[in-house]
Length: 442
Image 1: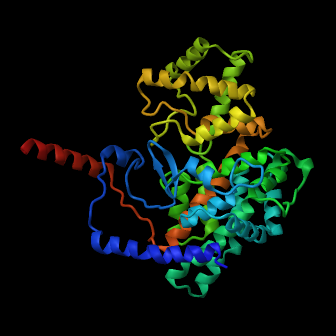
Image 2: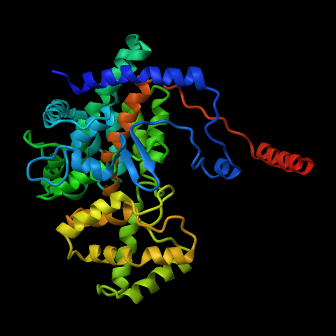
Image 3: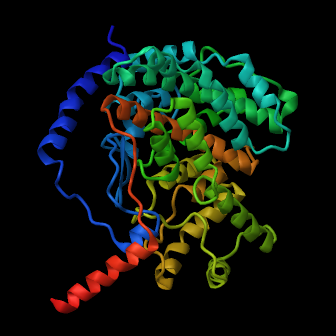
């Protein structure tokens, strides 16, 4: 029987010569230029990272291993009577680039079940936090506490060939991914539903369905979980959470250090907290309208008022995308089918029909279309997950699949410690002045 790990090993053996050839034959070829605005503006758009796991196409949105999001949702195997695919199948795709068979997903589900036992000390760590702690702080600490379980650290201390770094990294990553839904659900129940207690996973359920079960949610929240984890799984390597995980792992820190760092990056209001801002803004709109769905002109007036006050419309625009985010579209279709009469969804739907034209008229937004955050919080709210702070925990569980798949491949291909060079403001000013003088002389 060929396991996922066997298949991954074969893929690694095929891929290594490609990197060697690129470095040997074309190592000095220039692939990008850097402007002053990119240096000062957080390196936005600088082509300086590599990942084969996902690519953010400006016109088609996220591609996982070359597949559009719609293709992923269509082609991956699904549980019986479910709309959304197995999350386990996505892991197979991210690692190998191949759509798994139903049999391969079944085998991987068994593999995950065998790895999901969480040591008791992790529950103790979670329980030690005050009940008003932020769930992301608890999640980060819980993941960090698992560091003592690292196979990579144990093997590395005994002496490990560099070409084999990926093997124990794969073991750590798969172990953590199997445990994360249990940890996330436990944090939710501890903070928001302490009377529910600790719900142990059902051995007959897949990862998405088990998460819903442990959260105490009925169908179709199992599909909500699968959808949420899949659409948030990866977004290239340059976003804060993915890049932080990649950066920390490049020092050979283990999966647990890297994932905890990823979670910490995701907790920032400019990254993973955007869906909360959307919900707050929607609820302010609803309160101002007294719960009445505004007509088109009232909605336009509210949007213009927000913009004229120097604020942005939360959930709209994207640094890379130049069309409606497919992750938004997937959730919109789900809402149209399952919660068309939901009050907040009606607001989202109405905004979708007026905001893009207003943003185009204003002329400041490069992309006037909604992104994933414009819809995701509304779905969670509808199914009773009304605690804003917890949304980023859900995001973290999904994002871990892409980040950890990337790190496994980083180790397999021997990518080095990441170390970009920095310069001073004075040096940058002199460079600009030199170019100005040179241009005059020319």
